[in-house]
Image 1: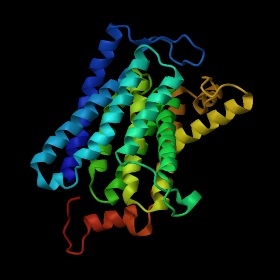
Image 2 (image 1 turned 180 degrees about the vertical axis):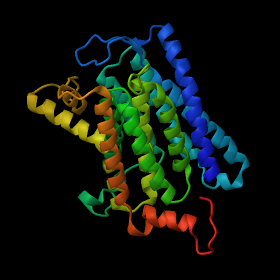
Image 3 (image 1 turned 135 degrees about the vertical axis):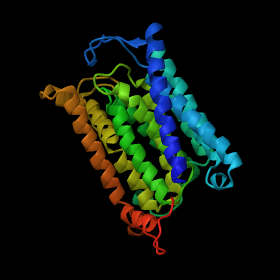
Image 4 (image 1 turned 120 degrees about the vertical axis):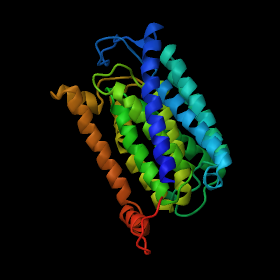
Length: 343
């Protein structure tokens, strides 16, 4: 499986790298750019916002190739569920199309939340759902309507959290990369599954795009990218949590998405206290405050990368002792027979 993971990652990285350059030039030629007309905008020249197109196409191509490979490879077929792939990719495509339309035409917040709610419901109907919350309700299974409400709330929160921190070059994509790798590691510890293939493909696509999005960026992630990445991560966290203990299933995703969740919570509280609508944009985000304190654009991004990395490491410490990262590494590379084995 190691070769499959590596091949998927490299293909996603290279295809996203090539596609991002093409999408950037195509969007610029057609005038699909973000013009710095508002005070909260930090760029000084018009830049294309459709970076998510390259990530989506690269990720989708990887999934199609992996699905075709699974059809002719019994070993791959055992861990690759086409049904689960469709359950995630179909609503994710809906979210992506919503983001593309918003990047080009603009969409109001109520339309966004309505479409996201429909996509989240599709996940719920496909079996990716929150069935209990042990911290609040113990081990009791939630009624379906309550589980549906929490599932929709989780998907909307994570989807829009990554969109909310997309205010600096490379910030949302870099933070998502750390979160993606956590989901990959957790899924891998539970045994190679579709989630491991999807997360490594998403990580490669993000990294290939990040070459053009890091400061000074030549293309923005856009809603087509931030909403798509956030939605896929929320779905993969739901899927990956199905094999994990209940406490771990709740805690690890929340901690690994720590930066966007923290930013979202602070933004909501700040706007409620000031009496402003929750959907109002402002220059009071964490990255804006750091810039106002004299830090450069790159310094802020690198600092927040560090924060994301800390959250990622903290989430891995929540793994059960019997499934810790160190136990897994030792058993994978130093088995009792004394010879190395593949993952």
